[in-house]
Length: 80
Image: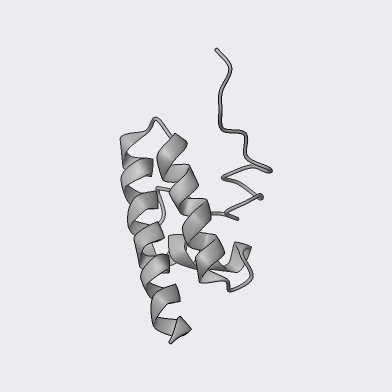
């Protein structure tokens, strides 16, 4: 079966989301994601949203979606 989603780089590890891991605390996960995207909360939100949509692990999906919503909210607040 051919997958329709092909990320440009790794989603986890020293790649697209840095050291983001479902086993880390909320603060550590978000710090890793924002530092991997060089402070751009919109890019972090999109990367985490992509991860949440393609993963088969329920815990990863739930945490990535929550972090994605956090970064979208943060982007919206800083945009004003």
